[in-house]
Every structure is written in C-alpha cells, then in structure tokens.
Picture 1 (tube, rainbow, N blue to C red):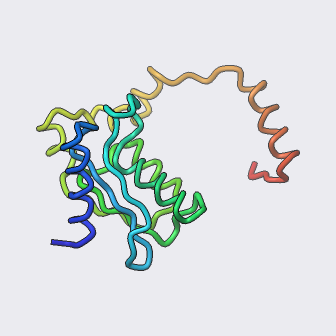
Picture 2 (cartoon, rainbow, N blue to C red; picture 1 turned 30 degrees about the horizontal axis):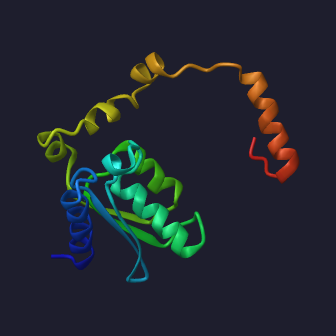
Length: 152
C-alpha cells in the first residue's frame, strides 16, 4: 500500500470513529513530506464544506504560509467531489491520487454524481442566474484600481 494513501485512510478513520463525518481523509505531500492532512468534519462543524480534502488544504496552507500549493500532491480516500476538485485546482496542486471512485461513494449513500451533472450548461442554467452585472463590474474595477491587477 502507498504510505501516503495509508495516512489518508488513518485520517479518515479518525473522522469515522469520532462521528465527525464520512469516510474521507486526505493528506497533502510536497517533496515527499506530508504538509497537510484532514478528514471529513461535516457533522462535527455543521458545515457542508468541511470535506477531507478541504480540511487538508486548510492545514497545508496554514503550515506552509501560502495559498499556493504548487509542487504538492493530494492523496484522498475518495474521488474528489466538484467542490474539492475546484479547491485543488485553485490551490495549484500538481496531482490527485484517490482510492474509491464516485460509483463506490454512491453505493454508501453519497451523491457526488448529482453535483457533476449540475456542471452541464443546461443544468447550470436552471440554477445559476446573472444579476446586477454592471454594479458588480464597478466592484471589480475598484479592485483593479486598488491592487493594480487586471486580466480583462
């Protein structure tokens, strides 16, 4: 067994045994060293965003003093849901290794596939609507003026 996946499994067991959330644990590795770890704490924190990957990202960012996890890899017990995959991408991680896939996860009562379907343009259009774009563009302009950052 891969030693980092083994650590992710140990992390997931902590969450299960303490009734903090589902069987999801993750570790983040940089240059062969664990820099972050976490497990699902949705039940403990009463927060649907406290997935194992999210908790590991928080831990790694805190430990490294950065939001940029370039050069890092994440090992997670379950295939990342769209939220976690988005966070992994925003963090600039290099690679994702997962144990169980979304079909396995569905078999134990989790509904990740539903959220992947929401990403299709047709489904997204039913749920996500643009509103007050001009007012929000002024906010973006203010950000550019203050920070000097502009990409549009």
